[in-house]
Image 1: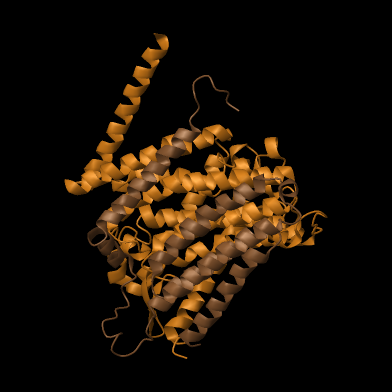
Image 2: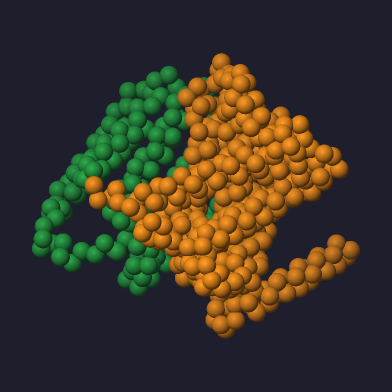
Length: 374
Length: 174
């Protein structure tokens, strides 16, 4: 078979490594989430299992597997099982198009440190994100529980609403790079020309939408305990619940990696060409992979930081922010980017966009306040 | 595996899941089979090297429209709204409509019979036709007017939806 050549084998091994890294980071995210929460609330956090509680994820996994795996009597059995499976599947599929590094040559085989370099890269991410809601929707409905159904419906409408603003913020990136391929987007940002300098508004929109798509606080309405018991996973127990929670941590890491790819230069880091000249391109590419994972972990930290800082939104506030705040803002961002490309000063236009935005908000606020008094 | 075998497998899967959409008793199962059918159709797009259409098909149909279908069906009370069996008149009308559509489709395919690929008619074939760059160029040059008309159609639909959903002054919130 012609498919089974060296590049195929190398890519298969690379995908296995990415898979292992993703799962390992997701497992240890649970540990660091609790440590960070403890730090912010002036507690110690998990410290019993191993030194500094470092074996806590393993203990949690054992607990999850040992618990009784209960399926409610009136639930739809197959869909009840399919829900967490779909969540895990969609969470793990996105990393296929994230470029983890530049081309490397190992044992005479030259290949990219990327699962697949398709020319629709970012649309792939977008498509998988839009499928991510099925796991929650199917699981919540199959539980045959009103609270689960309400959680599932909240998740579905929230994801669809925030996908629009997310897509619009990506359009501005595409205007700058002129390609849908994630690899090409990273290559236009090499040597410090990161998109964040030209797209500050776009990045803020994308970050907020990423919070909403991952169902993280302050947008974790689908699993809002005070209103919905446990939300869509009320009826779940054992490792099925574990899969739902695990999928959320995987999504956090992957969305961090996508944000690093789109806005923070992907595998680029200061002194890339110097390292490449000193240690060879292989070492530079592998350090680049480390740099990308480091950037993604920084975003995971931001996710946790926000979770323990901000209170939860109300549902109408969430919808109001998505539809009347972020979508017009992302359209404004597209116009600003277009203007920046026209005058060939994208960084200046980005800064000008922020200034115009704040002036506009200030004027609008002043005018509406006068109206209220009158 | 040869590419024709993949095609046969995918086509069989598409037909099977499309039939299951019709035969499934539970509407939720129907919708999920329909989502699976869209995936199979996306697989056909990949075989045709039309990656952009594949992604858009998944984003728009599987990702957005089918979620809304599922959403609406979940909100309905299925036990109340599901009649035991439909009347024979409805069944007859459905058969007639579906049969007419079948005849039209068969006639249309019969009229423009697709020739089997040979050396002559594949000489001008480029594998890059379905790529997003080429598709965009064709859309914005050759098919510019229909493209803009479609966007006006969407705009009109959006205005209509806003008008329907707008609260009149003095109307209750819920």
